[in-house]
Length: 381
Image 1 (cartoon, rainbow, N blue to C red):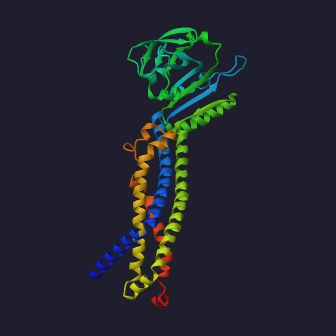
Image 2 (tube, rainbow, N blue to C red; image 1 turned 90 degrees about the vertical axis):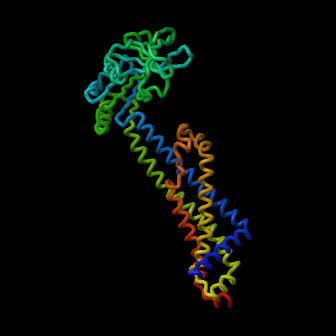
């Protein structure tokens, strides 16, 4: 037991001595390892943040939501309007057909608002989304930041309207993209007939499991009725996108991890072999005194593991420091830039990189393991 303690003390002193004698080699290994770890951490964080953004998007809109947009049709065309064609959806969930006017409304604050034209088919869906009993005024403004029951003076083209301000439900962001929405009944929007409109439908299925079949049936019906230009989107389709991002992250981890591991093996292995050759006679002499090869192998292994673990911790600190700057330029939401709220650099979430570094450290000393099998007599001779 005492001999093992003495061997451990000697190897520790030897490692420290080599670090002090060759600070350039130590700094080079640390710098390279930190850089490689930092690149890997940023790559993985990018995928994790993308997954998080898609998950939040799905949660925000709800998995059972569908939005359909189509360009307005000419009066000479003979085909049903969307609200007539898809009216049967009202039996399967909340059905809100509407038209988006290609002209913005101007609020008293000079802020722009999208103009939504609704008809009798839209009223049940509006009452359901807004939680109304049907007593709301015909013109209303769905916007945040206004007092309740406020009346806002709104200008659309050359006409003025008094709109009741209401708080919009979060699902309307699917339509508004966070802009205010001015709702005008079709009976009062005849003055805007000269402007083009975009027919749209917002649908919330009672059962998200059935929504895939509903989407497929809707697309087939639209093609049959001659709707050539339309856009149908749903968070349920983003689930496949989320799975694709996760698969891509796994592949990127494998390729990027292999690249990092290979460079670590080449650089750390080359420096370890160089140090071994510089001290080959001293190593052989220690072996002749009874020091086992396993002890010498542990010396090089611990040396590499210590430097790589220090590099990993340094890379984690740097990644947290520059996280906001790097991913702000990538366009991620501000709440994903705060590592105190969501930290993709926690050690528990980066065990793959730690294991990779440990394996790379082990592989890098294989040439030394082979060299230490050489008999002492041949080395000293």
